[in-house]
Amino acid sequence: MTSNAPYPPALDAGLETERLSQTIKDWSIANGLAVRPPPALVGQNQDPEGILAINAPVTLFPSPFPKSCFEEAKAIQTNYNELYARISQDEEFLGRLVQEVAGGDDFIAKLWEIHLKVKEEGYVQNLSLGLFRSDYMVHQDGDHLQIKQVEFNTIASSFGGLSAQTSLLHQHLSKTEYPLLTTPIPPNTLNLPPNTSAHSLAAGLRAAYEAYGPSILNHPTCILFIVQDGERNIFDQRHLEYSLQQSSIPVFRLPFSQLLTHTTLSPTPLRQLLYHLPHNPSQIFEVAVTYLRAGYGPNDYPTPSSWLARRRIETSNTIPCPTILTQLAGMKKVQQVLATPPGPSTLAKFIPDEEKSSALWRTFTNIYPLDSSSPAGREARRLATDPKECLKYVMKPQREGGGNNFYKGAIPEQLKKVPEEHWNSFILMELITPPAVQNTILRQGKLEQGGVICELGVYGTCLWDQKTGQVKHNEEAGYLLRTKGDQSEEGGVAAGFGCMDSVALV
Image (cartoon, rainbow, N blue to C red; front, side, top):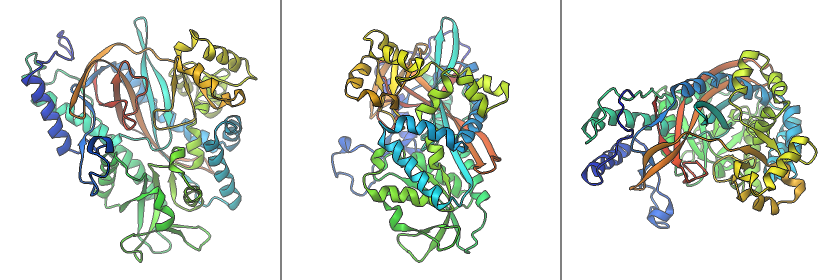
């Protein structure tokens, strides 16, 4: 961005805004920047055939983002991949943290229980795949800008498909529409970096598929996407599928609730996971890679059979993305332990290279436990229950998916509902102060204009041997920019809080 004109430019409230909005609506549907509509929008049972799609919420302009922060986040992603691959291999470390939070978190306790049962039975697959995303906000301290990590996602890291399309949308508009505005943005004025998130995430899945090798049972092999019933974010997932299918890799989708119905384990010592096509059960594919876009929260496990389904994946020879241990590595408790003194020594245990570990340490913000035994935990309890001090913090459970956190004044109220002995199942994080940014969000056909907050996610793909520690594939895999109104505290797009965006580097 080289012009001194205000950015983004003010739009005429009439035809100019209408033209730009309509162009975005049409381009988005034509290019798969879309979601299925929520039942509240179309009415219950008004789309029984699943034919409707609407625009994913998106900004009219790419948001300005500091180039130095963007480049730093991308540069350290392979270090983060390596860190979480090594954490996933440290069962003793994870087990200790699980015990700290399990008393107040039945879901974490149940995941660990499944791991122990499979360990007793004997794991048969050593390879593990992570499709990760490290989320950041820019923290402004005076004139100094730096990225601070919000969280690290190890399961169902979504929006890689839609993020690539959002970048293409804004690139298209920069060539065709922005130059025609009343306050024009000339072509090539905006610094819009390429975004290969869909293809790069698919490349990680492809690396695992190739590492699995041919079936010794002479079945064709495949990648199986495990999804939620009634998945609205289907097009995001389809972009990854289509990229894989261009490489002639068979890809199938299976709701988590139907996994036990349409899969079996081979009666061999390797316990291959076999997928029987629902419309032709005699046609069998051996599942080389199982990619979980479900199973990350308690709502995905409504019955005992749901846990049996997860155990079937874990006990089989498929390469899981992720394993239960890798999912547990994404606990907020892990993030807190890495960031809380003596955090540097904990980090160095996994990343002994001082240059790499220092680069990671700089992205950490202040995070505290809420236990009653450590000095940090007792201080955090004081901060969380003080009506003034709590306004600087967010309290997080061990959850993925958005909409689970407690902010500022809601923290003391929530803690009153939780027995004190279970407070340590939460972590307390200092709020990040981002720079002021303006933009306009197009959501369900309506415009929301004003101050916004941007959160950058950088994807990474990593394939490693859980037994030997050998890393076979480690790549940075594109980015996601999610933007929300500056009065919103949560940021999940699928949870209805944020929207899709892309970066204009400044």
